[in-house]
Amino acid sequence: MSVRLPPHSHCLNCEEPVPEGEQYCSEKCMVESKVKQKQSSVRNKLFYVIAAVALVLLWLFTFVL
Image 1 (cartoon, helix red, strand yellow):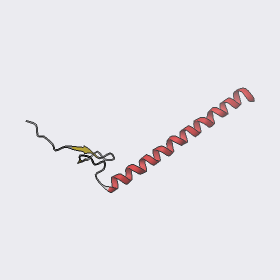
Image 2 (cartoon, rainbow, N blue to C red):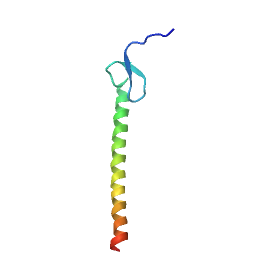
Image 3 (cartoon, rainbow, N blue to C red):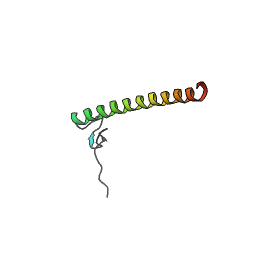
Image 4 (cartoon, rainbow, N blue to C red):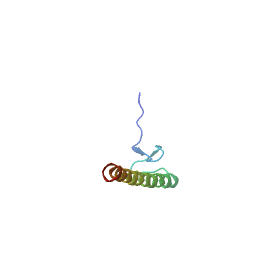
């Protein structure tokens, strides 16, 4: 026999159940999630910059020097 749960969703940060329509269970989780998103964005941008520099250096050492 299964028990019906009330409509709910889950916190985007910690996966705890939250009332339907809400994204976070607390202010703390919202702040943590925003910090993680910002860190991820910075990390991705850094990766692309390093990849571009590596390609330019590879081109320089292959064709120019």
